[in-house]
Image (tube, rainbow, N blue to C red; front, side):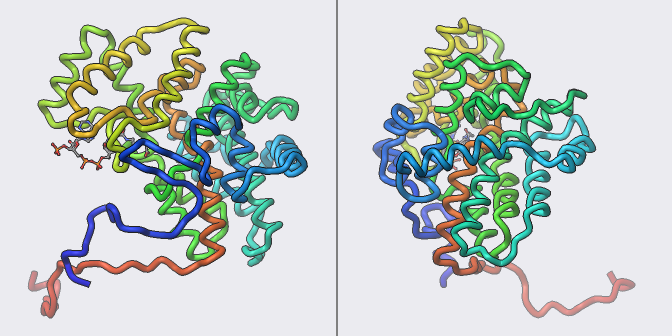
Length: 379
Ligand code: CMC
């Protein structure tokens, strides 16, 4: 392999073969198992979409009833995990807490080397989809000195998560909006965190460690962490009048505008209009606030300046705004992205196991050779 073949960030290098999702960055198309994301957001829901992603096809009524029932009834977490969360520092980032919890869960459900058993895969998927939101909500309650709010079996997946955050049952529009947000973020081909999941999966480690690896990778500000950064940017801008001077300053300093740009999409991210429409409905129902108006102005001004480079708002530009309106604290945004991405990561884990080969890329060595060792007294 010649030096010329090295691609920083592996940009454009296929890392795997997959039939889970498809992105066309030039036309702005995203499909899960061949179904357009817009249709899934309109006609499906997060749990049905999770089944589709992991098992490859939309479930029959019987399959869906049992999948949904299992998830809704397995949302509780072990008291020892609750005790462990109690020991985390209050100021810990929720993504770090979640990563630790995901690994800890694996200790309670040890791998018995039956990774290829359909039952093992099904049960691990159920458990992770069911419990990850409970872990996030429990950490959030406990860092404020409160007991965690136990899940309520009769509440939908989305409604129950919002309920566990503050013990208030959300309005149907809020729960529906949150469910669509989860669907939109459920899968997105081989991005950084999914690639990380694939690498860990290829070592045949257990799915809890696979997810913990992915959670660690998702947290960075260039990936899932961008939604938190968008909200902080809107707060920093503070007023519509400050939008132009703020963007001028950022661009003069060659700094990135958070929530804009994408390695793949060179047109508007297809998830962004879905979220934008939802945000409009949510703000109409629960009242406009200045962040919404500032966001609209940032979108207008930044698009005017960046569109010629193929840089448009991405999914994270609106997700933070929506989560804030749903009453979710900013530092939980990335953990919510993680909740949503669980089925995507699991689908890739399952696909990797079906035709596994240990990842072992090569490198382009740029160091020295044949250096003589110098003893410490001579250095
Ligand atoms: N604001 C201003 N300029 C930008 C931005 C931005 N957000 N993104 C890219 N550019 C410019 C960049 O300065 C460069 O310009 P020039 O050619 O004049 O030097 C050009 O566009 C190409 O930039 P790049 O960094 O090589 O592009 P990339 O493919 O590595 O960018 C990205 C992808 C997501 C890392 C980048 O757009 C970015 O940092 N965006 C802000 C963070 C963000 O919103 N991330 C969420 C991504 S979507 C969710 C996810 O996948 O996790």
